Image 1: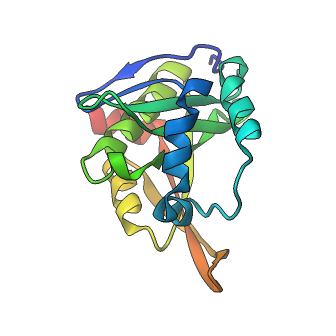
Image 2 (image 1 turned 135 degrees about the vertical axis):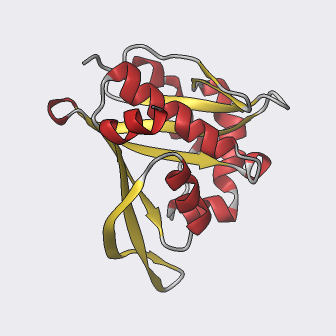
Length: 184
């Protein structure tokens, strides 16, 4: 098993995933500022610009995570990010998260970006398990994750307080054995 020192460029029919950089800040800030994106990601607070720029500036130095910009092939614009993080090398596992701004929604970009990222994690990095959490008020994302091979494992009840309402978090994962079988 390797680590995340290699920052690949992954190309699909609809998207190109490449190393995120500070130059992507403007596009990602627009995506993260969208009220629906904030809600679906459970993002309560704003990140100061300089702190966010520093974050993106240092992603290429991280060997324990992979942060990729999602580029819409049709427009050439950055529409989101796809991330493998919370790496546990002893258990060959990671967390997955994705963010797609309004400019990239509803066209299958997220599904393809998810498949490309998961495929890289399992086939190239050697991960056995990739997990994620999706809030119950985002069934569209849950369906996209299921299309990419994730299965529901359980629910963290009342995991997010949003606008005075408690929201459950649906826990999902894909295993390397499931991934390999789905490609056979």
